[in-house]
Every structure is written in C-alpha cells, then in structure tokens.
Image (cartoon, rainbow, N blue to C red; front, side, top):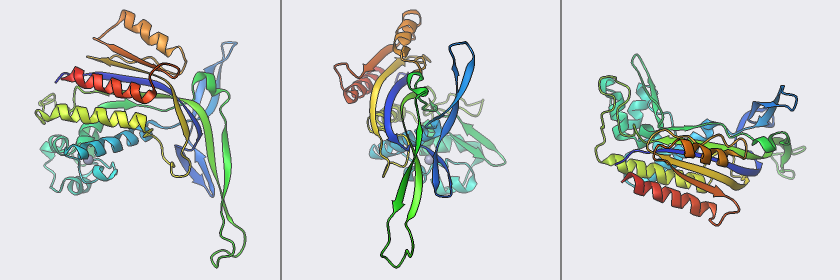
Length: 315
Ligand SMILES: [Zn+2]
C-alpha cells in the first residue's frame, strides 16, 4: 500500500455545550479554559481566558472509534482498549491484563503492535525498569474559539436541581448544582501519518521494520473509517447524555499528500485561501478537499467522499 499524510482543519459551531469539563468545586462543575493571546489594534497583546476542548478529549474519542471499527473488522484490539480504557501498556500489570501474556521486555513494541490496533495507531508508553515509547501516528490539539468569535464568547453557569421532595430521602430543599455551559465557533485540527503504522519505531536497530505484513492496509482503512465516523458523529467531548450540543460544521479543509503537508490554522477564516495559496507553491502530490457550509455537498457527503478517495489512493 501507499502511505499518506492527511491534514484536517475545520471550524464547527457548537451551541450549549459542556463537552470538556475540568474539576468540580463542591456542586459547581467547571468548563475547561485556556489563555489565548490576541493582538489588539494598537499592536499590543491582550490575554483572554476562553472555553476549550482538549486534544486529549479528541484523541480519546478517535481511539474509541478505532477500537470499534477494528473489532468490527476482526482486527486485534487488547482487552482494555476494547473497553475504551486507554491505559495502554503503561506497566507490567496492565500489559499482562491487556494481552493475557507475560512481558518479554525485548519485544514490548512488537507484541503491542501485533495485538492492539489502537496502540499501534495511537501509541503507548511502557514505563518499568525498561522504558518503551511509541509515538502516536495521529496529531491533534485544543479546540478553541475562532478569531472572529473569541472576544464574544461567554461561559455561563446553569443551575440544575434534582427534585426529590415528598420522598423519604430528602427532608428539606432540593439538591442543586451548577454546570458551566458555553457556546462558540471552535477550531478543529487532526493530522494522520500512516508511515509508521504496523512498523517498529523504538529500537534503533529495528526501526522501520513492518511487523503486521499485509494487514497494514486493513489497519489504515480501519483508521479512515474511524475518522469518518468520528467527524460525522461528533465523536469528541463528554457529558453528552444531558448536554448534547447543537453542532454544525461551518467549513473544513482536508489535504491528502504523500508526505507531511499541513493545512494552515483555521483560527482565522482565510485559512481556506491560505491553503490554496500554499498548494500553488508547495505540493507533496497533495489533493486539497474543501467544504463550505453553503456549498452543494452536505458535510456528511463531503467527509464520505474524501475518505473514499483516500482509500483508493492508498491501494
Ligand atoms: Zn490496547
């Protein structure tokens, strides 16, 4: 199969979301915030604390989708990753529980790659007397408010109560709690590099050696299917049983190349133009796919068509 580098950047409008909460202080649950520096008109910079959804949250969602698609396609997934518990071979006990075998410390990476597609693609860190590290084959980061939305974004604590008066369990009052809810147009970034999928990377002597044979292509196809379902079904974030946001993708650019070729940051809305300009000067056999909300294709059609074209390209 042919390897590809896929770079995805987009903008999604999320209303009434509580997708990434941090600590709770008493009965108050806080939304994640990050500091953002913004250049002011006089050339100085000001800091804004704005709602964000972490890259870890995105990675978790994508790995859940990878585990599901891998199982559907009868590809190996370890016991813990199969349940959405991504402890990922971090020590001897977890390794034994995950793979049902004792650790041979000379073959940690090989055993993990062969027996768990999630860790082959998403990496792991085995930290015992011997340390073995596998870097993730996909890259993502914080979803933050877009430039045009950033200064107007608010976080609002919403009051909720569990009403239980009239039962023997509650004598006085109701249990009240607050959940911080936010609304914003958010940026989205995900890069995928298939080069090292199914290959050893850690031991310098053997790095680059393919240990899954022909199954590599199937693994990449599973990753593509997982990415499609992740994007179309909004696989990122948590707290969705009662705070399911209203979401709408505004735009997306996907670049598919032979080697690293990243789409410019979607923080400002000219990122689509910037991507086209970049392609006019630099191409790694790059195909550029652009989605805009008011175009002919629906978002779902766009994603499905892109994924199908990548599947053809890798064959
Ligand atoms: Zn695993």
